[in-house]
Amino acid sequence: MTDIQVNENLWTAYEAAAATGGALCARGGDPKEWTAEEWSASGVSIDTRSLKPGEIFVALRDARDGHEFLTRAFEAGAAAALVARAPADAPEGAPLLVVGDTLQGLRDLALAARMRNFGKRIAITGSAGKTSTKEILRAILAGCGAVHAADKSFNNHWGVPLTLSRLPMRAAFGVFEIGMSHLGEIMPLAGLVRPHVAIVTTVAAAHLEFFKSIEEIAEAKAEIFTGLAPGGIAILPIDNPHYEFLKTRAQAAGAAGFITFGEMAAADFQLLDYQADGDGARLEVNIKGDTMAFPVGIAGRHQALNMLAALAAADAVGAVLEPAIAALATLCPAEGRGARAVIPVEGGEALLIDESYNANPASMAAAIGLLGAAPLGDGGRRIAVLGEMLELGDDARALHAGLLDALLAAKVDQVYAAGEMMRYLWGQLPPEMRGLYAGSAVGLVGAVEDAVRPGDVVMVKGSNASKVSAVARALVGRAEQNSRITQESAH
Image (cartoon, rainbow, N blue to C red; front, side, top):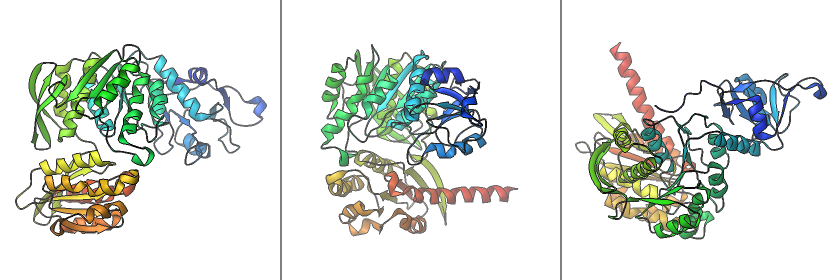
């Protein structure tokens, strides 16, 4: 089994109205003559660009006011719209559900969806690895029942309730990632999800601009335990310096049990050995006293630890581990999170490792380590393309400069760097390691394309706002263009 395909009604008009306390009406003519509309919806959307026919459009007020897009939503096939007002230019006869506040209305839908579902819920937070762990869980739980999880990193104040509002009544498992950039943000989201299992993947330097210390980040991550359902289990990274603090916070929140993962001998799910193997790896692990070895489809020691956290969570919700472990071999890294592509270059091929989806010092070091472990072709070099890491506060300069140790350990041959903070790393690099520095990632695209030679491995990493993904897209575009040319030649 896999993700539930929504071929049935997720919400009827009256269920949605009962959940939100909203008023059902249809826009058009005299407001005194608005009539309640009967409709049903197959999903929930907040974005007209991705809205599918039959979904409820929720008009959130964010960077733009969603009420401005009602016409577009109904042109795209929305079944109804959740609104706080009925704009004069709303399509005539359009079915509306009017509430006092649309974000609260979305939360109300989410709560009702949770209350009518009797499956198991898993929530994930951490300074890195949230989305990867979510996707691993999606894959390994699929053999045990229908799995519901967001397709994207919907982990903020609207993303979590949006994902939960889409939870089908029949789902056996719901997997939710919860992020934050300030203290107090995780607690209400964890309380909304009420997970049976809560995972902290790691605690590391991230969003330091908004925190006094990494200890305060640990405090924020520990908020996830406050939402645990009765009998809930905490999954904890035993190798992390903040493990004991996290455990204390989980105990105080009423966690009924603990499962640990990591490389220490005391871990319940212990990584004994990691060996890179092509695009994947082979792991040797000890799971609750039993030693076993198996292949996995995603490379990276950090990903191996994410897999152990996911297996621990699957075990905690009653999944059978044998098929879950077998499913790990079928994993493929997502775009921007370790996805690999063969790049045609003059005289041969190079390899791209696309890690361009966001970065902090922990995930940056992991990605550099992944580059260091990647096998080179004949005469090949290891090339790191790095965009700056944001929201690191007063420590930003030192944390960027400190990446030098990871680059040296990984035997990286060339570095291409972009962004103001990357100047502090650039100044530390040995001259022979310097490829090019640019103020913005766009300025690196042509230079990287020209520099890549047969046998090279290129890894791209940086915060989303650094736009370093432009380099990865350019290289992938070259690969796709070559593929099209090859196919056309074959015909």
